[in-house]
Image 1 (tube, rainbow, N blue to C red):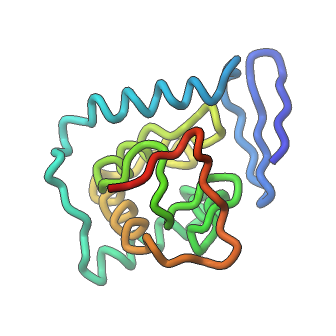
Image 2 (spheres, one colour):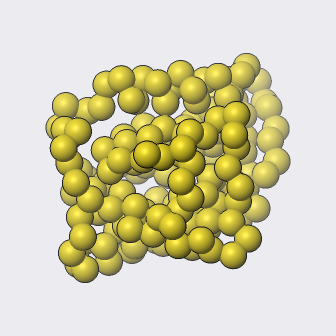
Length: 161
């Protein structure tokens, strides 16, 4: 990934050729940690902590289509096998902002703009049902151990319980 700062914007370009212009953050790691803390402290009211991952084949297939499609660009930065490229590994046991379906939905919805992930990946909103399907698909792949997966960042990532 290359990063170039222009005036008050940062342009991020990942190896897959995806570019995003995001507001400049003097300390992007601290900004993302503040965002993660806010997400964990106040999940959207429409989702309760008791929300469970979907497990039916149709929902997981729709989640996979959302993940692999070009509308939201998930696979471009997290790899088609979810092993992480510019974005983090989504199948290991170390996550930045929580490991529950609600945590994954909230992180997707809010994004990590200081690190180049726009809300919903591309900035185009998803419905609550699509978010639930996408998060369920991601969680269904946890532990799949793809080859050459990106290692976690011990300074940032926390173990899932």
